[in-house]
Image (tube, rainbow, N blue to C red):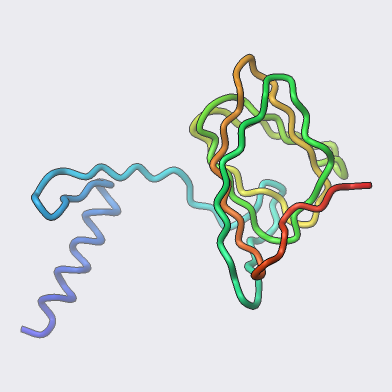
Length: 143
């Protein structure tokens, strides 16, 4: 009898993994749509986390059409979900660009100079999540 809860948990996990849906406490369907599963950044680096006093910071960004962010880099992991718009991100060290659109998930490069431009007619809206050492900033501007 002791293994039944563990078996039930494994079956629930298998069901979740294959159907991406579940039920809330009232039996109402809850739909879960996986958006991304990655082990590397946009430039192919392995994702590494801060080693001490990790703080999660969540921000909403809105970038006007035609706007270009200054060249910058991130010392810690940054993740972004594109809620709206089209964003072109260019690694200024390699010249390689990636274009992200509504619904895309970005795992930004760590410690590499890059910049982003809204290349669409509408504002880009991003939900940004940073994992930093406590009280640290995650954007360094190139001087």
